Length: 365
Ligand code: NAD
Ligand code: DAU
Image (cartoon, rainbow, N blue to C red; front, side, top):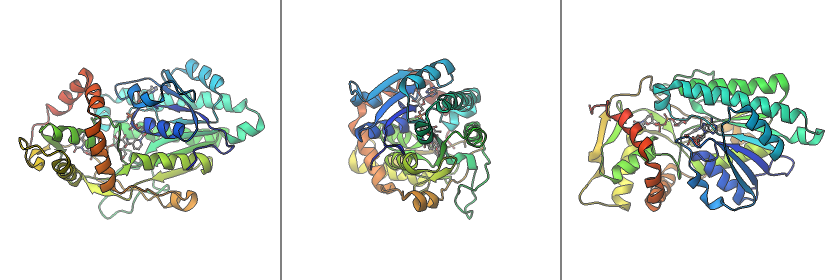
């Protein structure tokens, strides 16, 4: 798999490259021979340690800064002259968006608008060939489509938008802006709408790493509501390969749904993590980790089911996921067990404050 843009050049600007998916993508892109400048604010979710192995690599550069800072973005694109901007930077956690929606509107809507404006100015001043080859790839989510009933078909690229959380609404707003910049100005945009990711470097406020680390420590495993909400899980490496395919061969102005064909109820996911840990890291003082499961009050507005119809990207770009959920989860458990120092570093005071805020009020049911 190469990871080059249409003209064979490979210098790109990646926003949010110190977060979970962004860092997995950057590590892969540089390993494949690409040249990357990362722009990342290093919020609580951003971590330079994720990119530690690239320090000193001449094909990698890190810039700490805000995508909402138009002057910074303008100067950076002029200096880097990227063939593509791959835009991951966002506030990404639904529970936090319920507590503090303003931060989501600011970064996800205003930030994407700022990037689009600066990308448009830069792109419009390029020569013909470079202008034709430039791409703005916007990384978005399946949550913009709302919630499915058990019998509903999976989300396709034609499913109407119906976002339900402030996070999903802010991502939907950013998707609409990206669409408008293609239709109005011709900026060669690409949008990907992906399902739930898991894998190395995921911040432990999201279900899989949170449960994994709590179960390791013998702490309660909080399951919202009845535990029957369904997500379509995709191993992060497969998401990164899909983004590379879209960058290489996607049609400007188009959107691509990316999913794992792995619908699982949350309770099943939590039980599978317990079984894997009981096998890979047995602890007689804890015993059967499934006993740690606690049903807690539901997330307000909790979407019941997500599922992605990824037939378009398979048909048009020959991409499909390679890693099964069982294999990906085993790899993920192994990665966390082997990276406890990383875990210790991200469980800072700010992390502990969030855990207190989100779970203290949720008395076990
Ligand atoms: P994350 O929260 O782990 O990382 C977000 C990164 O963006 C962090 O490094 C953070 O420091 C950076 N950032 C935040 N605000 C910024 C700002 N104003 N300026 C510059 N950088 C800023 O997120 P993730 O899970 O890696 O998700 C990445 C993208 O993929 C997001 O756009 C998200 O909506 C989308 N997505 C995520 C998933 C998933 O399951 N995690 C699924 C589909 C789509
Ligand atoms: O679908 C893609 C989205 O997946 C991305 O756009 C988001 O950035 C990403 O965070 C993720 O959103 P979810 O809300 O689905 O992920 P989260 O890991 O927070 O929750 C997964 C499911 O598990 C969801 O149904 C809520 C439930 N849950 C979550 C937590 C943190 C629990 O039952 N208990 C918990 O403690």
